Length: 259
Image (cartoon, rainbow, N blue to C red; front, side, top):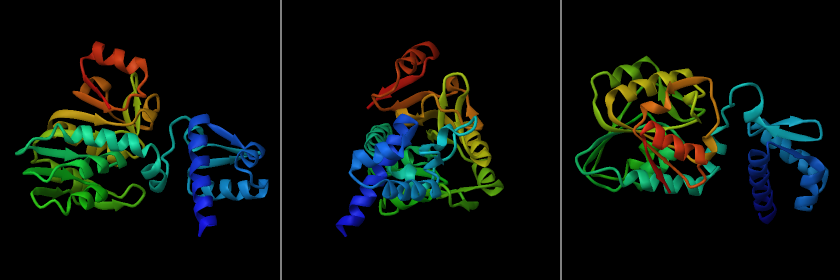
C-alpha cells in the first residue's frame, strides 16, 4: 500500500513539475526521486496516456504547449492542480452571494469549490455542472436549477441545444464564470465550442459577471473565445496574479479580488 502511495505522490509531483517548467528529463527525474529511469519512463507513459503531458525524446513536455492553443487537460488532473488556490477562490466567491440571490455557476473545478463553500441559505443556483450539483445536493435551503442536455464526460458537464435553450427565459443576479484561458488581448477562452456558446448565453442572462480562476490560467489562450476581458465585472484569483492583471483592472475598470 505504501508503494502505491509513493507512486501516486511521485506522479503528482512530476505533473506539477511539467506544468511549472514546461518539460522534464528522465535522468533528472530519476535522480530527484531516487528511482530507476525505467520507473520514471513508466510514470511518464502513465501520465501521457491520461493527457497530462506528451512524451518526448528523453523526457516529456507539457501538453498545454503542444500546438498553438492550450490543450485541455483530463478532468482528474484539473481537479488536483492548484487545489488550495481554488479553494480560497471558491470561499471568496461564496461571500458575494446574499440570501434571495439567483446565481449561475459555470462548469469547472474552481466552480465546484465555490459550490462547496456556498452557505446553506435561500439562494437559487443555475448550473450545468455535475460536480456543482453534487456539492449542493445536501444544502436543503439552496434551490437548484439543473440545465439539461448531453453529458460531456471530459469535464462532467452538460451542453447542447437543450442547455442553451433552457437559459433563454432565465435572468440571474450574478454569473460565476470558470476560466480555461485568460489573456488580456484575446479574452476569456475555453477548449470546447459548445461551452463557449453556453457561456455567452450565461453572460447575456447575468446582471453581473464574475470570473473565477487561479493564476495558472493567465496568458493561456484556448481555441474558443467567450468574452473580452472588458466584458466582466469582477475577477477573483490568487495572489500569484501577474502585475499586468492588476494594471488591467485599473485601466479596464473591473474589480479585482485577490485571495
